[in-house]
Amino acid sequence: MALTNETIQEKLTEKFGEQLTEWEVPYGMLTFRAPAEMNLKVLQHLYDAMGFQFMTDLTGVHFPDRKGEELSVVYHLHNLVDNIRLRMKIYVPVEKPDVYTATKLFSTANWMERETYDFFGFNFVGHPNLIRILNVDEMDYFPMRKEYQMEDPTRVDKDDEMFGR
Amino acid sequence: MSRPVQYNTKVKLVEAPEGYSGEGFYSTSFDKVVGMARANSLWPLPFATSCCGIEFMATMGSNYDLGRFGAERMGFTPRQCDMLLVAGTISKKMGPVLRQVYLQMAEPRWVIAIGACASSGGIFDSYSVLQGIDQVIPVDVYVPGCPPRPEGIIDGILKLQDLVKGESLRRRQSDQYKGLMESYGID
Image (cartoon, rainbow over all chains, first blue to last red):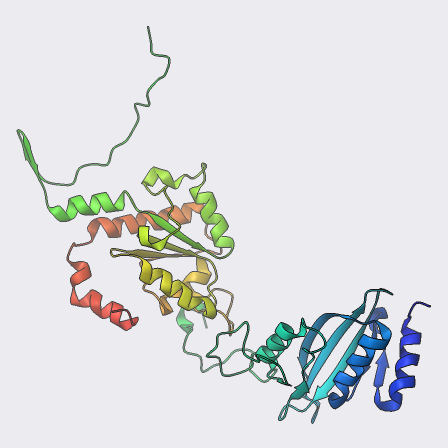
């Protein structure tokens, strides 16, 4: 029987019980939250037992107002046999953004995790080469975190006179 | 019987620089002759990264035809070129690459920043974009516009030709020029 959002939720709840929370189906795509330390267990189960063997995306989100769980990693998985996708989210505190790496399971996670580290500063534990991928190597901050002003008044690399400011 | 092929008799030659001439001789200053030769045979090196590059392609095309000004031969190696045309957004990560290209060009070399992005970062007031290429290499002519029309680019090149014509042969050895290079960390 082909998987549907309902059967996926049933099977995952059967396996992991109440540990998976915040079930939603925005725009028809099943979404749930897993505890950060369990991300690999859930991914492995989805890979081995439920056919989610293709990772379409891995990215980060910063919620500055959610104390203790500011940073989120979002995994998008695709079951190519049943042609169904799902989205898994984990949350970690911004002070200690440690996440177990998914590179052992999905090779494609290698560059995606580097990018997510580059922009949000996650520490992917066990990643073989966690260095910046898109930004300059000298950069000492994580630009996609929502902790910067829209325009930095201390910048010196813009000549205000030339821009009418 | 007229010839089957009519020769183009409207070929316009560059006017000779000021000088003294008499029967069998003509004398002028070496600066002016070299300047004239350089200005009318600039070899462009296009460093095109985005939409300004498309406008530059139109400039090189038959409609606008930069060849009319002696710059039709693009060289895609910096070692053969003397006019670097930076057309488009340069990210901070590309800054060292652009600088390397500039360093590989032999003196004398000139740089034109085409468009708002190359000149100042343009609309990309962002963590990832270089706020004007003059932060990494010296620039001779800035062409405004987002993107500039081919006429604008041609105007910029004509302005550069004026610079080249008037440049003293000793300029590149002058202390002022060396100071400029040093301010960019180029020895």
